[in-house]
Length: 222
Image (cartoon, rainbow, N blue to C red; front, side):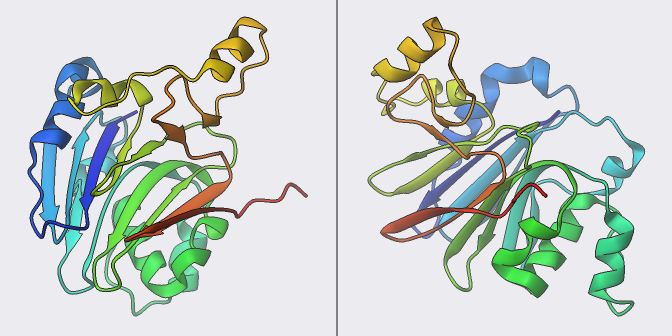
């Protein structure tokens, strides 16, 4: 599984890449296939790649599509590619990798994208035309996705511990999470061991813009 990081700063057109780099640098063992970065208005995204399927070698991570005004990064394995490609139609451009397929799906279905996906995934999409962040996690929480709110915007990472590389990280523990863990009742969603960090819950997507953030359930078990 790859490891990702992203920074959104509503006050700066071109945020510094250093925070994203710092969140990836200590995790070299999780990124044997290299670290990669991209910039977009008000955003920097990065990924430490671990390639496990040949299809992943064909894709670009993070992805930036200037025509759509969308950039994206993710740890994704889709199991219903044919279904998604069929729904998008034959006029869609070639999409060899799963992240490109997600971006095309977001352009078509918007916030309805996550509910159409089958597989394991954690991804972040930045729609800079509408200045909206869209992130989602698979229904069973196989892939993790954490975030923290900052004065300037929002940050994402695969693991909460990645934020410890940042100087402004509040390391105050979440006491209830610690107690729950000691009582063997800790669930790996929502609150984390750090008061400053939340985890996107499995089966939810998150949307955010300047001054607001919300999580929405997209998965209901049959």
